[in-house]
Length: 388
Image (cartoon, rainbow, N blue to C red; front, side, top):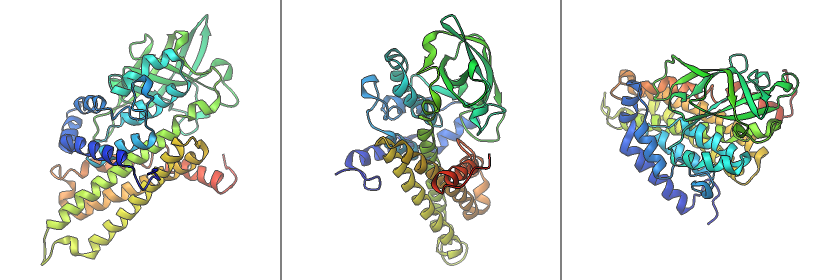
């Protein structure tokens, strides 16, 4: 039977179950223990890589699973639903793996894709700058030629997982393109490259992945560090952004499912009066309504992934943005209602919901804010004029 997104093939159902069972064997207790200790979920990442989950979307000829973004999003969703989402899956196989697979040379693919696929290489992604957040046209990190080499200068902020990466895909612009339309140049920078340094940003988020500010001070790179064309135009950079939004949606959908599941389990057994509190409509109806919202966001995410895998980039862009918006909004409400359902227990370490509060809020900010998504929908779906 042909997959339609909401009717999954037997292979996809088996993959979903395999990932769910695998993630449950680690669970939120492992994840939170690592996060609170300031450690990485290395065992989880390595095992997921060995099982082929991390590189399920990457080309088979380079060690990947040969499937699509639908399958990778499925992996992300089930990991998140089990309380142990791997943030670097959004970055390493979805963004970087996609860009290198589409635009890299054969040598670049052979060098990086197998490691990204099996998890032995984690590659961070650096685009955001202190003065260039949603407006990527304001990127000031520049690259200039010096013979056959490139010299990189600039800085980046809110870059995930630098301390667990072996390389970083850095978005800059050629020195000749400082003004006018953005013409991004993408470079793979190994983590031990001289001239690159970073500092950790203190965050109030319980997560095993940290955020960093990066500095590039006359970083010298060989010619083969450049991925794709020097003046690749916007399309090459944005090739990784539909996968980013789809994966962000998957993470938020999974988080919503996690919170709803925790609340439902508690409400079935917690009894204050004559019946469990789950029988009281003041608690059951809000949770049921949020379950509906999560399921609708999931459908839009599946539509986006299906369109993307079919090569419909423009259709996928609209659906991916809508899915990201819907999933972010629904997951925040799911976590908030779960806390309310558990009362005081919702804010204890024991029940594992409070730690998700700040993480769920992130879903409305990154990897693209809800406001920028609404701008996109207003302008592209509705044809309304821009204000910026």
